[in-house]
Image (cartoon, rainbow, N blue to C red):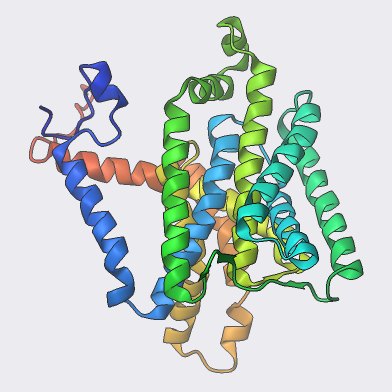
Length: 355
């Protein structure tokens, strides 16, 4: 039985096991217990921050499927989120539909958008692919703006708390458990998807498309499936966003939101599910950290007003720094720290070349 890090697999069963060592099982049990007990020991503000992180992690995991695994660049992530949110808002406004109807409907709209965007994207690469997804973003926002101005209020749609049977999802703690559970489920699906035949095909296409085609992989079909998977998960995340915020407006889905999600997967580590979660936490908490740091400085003369743009410029600066100095992101840093502890005290310096 493996008692160490579990990095050397000697059987197919060990390779397929998600939690293959005693240390990982203990760590997972401690994490689950900590998440379950967090609302009892933390303030409502901290609980809300974790809830926002869980919701952001769902969208980041969806984008990681498309960009991190399949290697398809997308600038239309905010448009997919808006599609899910406005689908939910329209169904609730017109038919008073419950979540058991709106969430599958949002997923179906996402799958349709994935097909609409994915088919033309088969002939596009690089910058042209990014611009094509950006065009979809603007089209979705235009449609959402028309819905908002014609059938919703002028400022947006108000959505009541979701009800399922006799239960109403209301309050910080209830939303915490709901969204953390959804994020855990999506994480489990994405981890297993990466280990499946489809996930391996995506990674082969990402690394070397011509070689993947020579091995018999249906490159066009795999790319299209990546768009459908990612867009479906993203629109469901947009529906959850609409229910959690209780209000849907076009202004909430600007291009800056798409940049935030790109920052999540780059800072966290492209192609890593752990990196998507860590990146979502980092990007979600960064503005609050900047606000706390500026407030702690107590600068005179309204300096907080002039330092406010730091929150927007920090994302671009951090993405550039991680791309240059840490391409593997926060997940790569975590792996190095973990390996250092597992190898200690047998860590040694690399051999120096002879003078």
